[in-house]
Image (cartoon, rainbow, N blue to C red; front, side):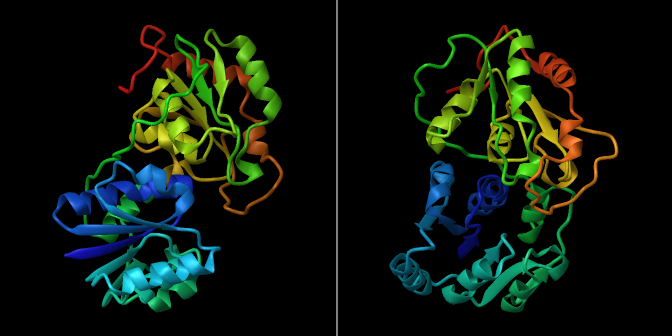
Length: 293
């Protein structure tokens, strides 16, 4: 059976759809995944065919539409819940187009393009995606990455200070203060690293310090130990999946998904000392790399 999976982006969201797509492929389905070209490297080791394109390029959009229409898909699963992702399913010609019920959609109008609507099960978005297909289990098959020169030879903590919107970030000055107190080097995720380099650096790290953002979800998918700092977003729904990363969130933090561009008070409430203590508890300096490369 030919199946279309639609999750165009972004970083963490693509990772969170990976267990469902992988479980479906392992069950014997022939799975094609439509994804933004920027995130396609994440799927290099996933047992799916990828159709990657730049949605801002009209020529590429038309070429993908023609390719999908001729593929003979039996069903299309839309994990994204946007009008643009639902339209991909509609354009594919799949007679069954499955998405979430309207209360779980970012754009409710997308629901009009589905033939079936599913109420997700579970608390975490990974479980939501699995339940869209009626599956359980799944895995995160990720590529090895590309070697990054200049990383410390011994144990280090890899930190990522940027999130999708500023309210989810930790004050920049806290990282410098934390580095002075840690017993191992604090390596910052560099803007000039590509995805493959980030994967390699994450595999090499002894632990990670992350936010509700793609690099932290990557570390969770790789089974790395570490600490995730949460403020306005819900760690029950969007937290690190798999249980290897400790979540820190200030008591009484208000949950909101408004994309505010000021650091949330709940993020400022997480002190450098408390973060250092949490990291020290999860650091194993006797082993610089918990994830085989």
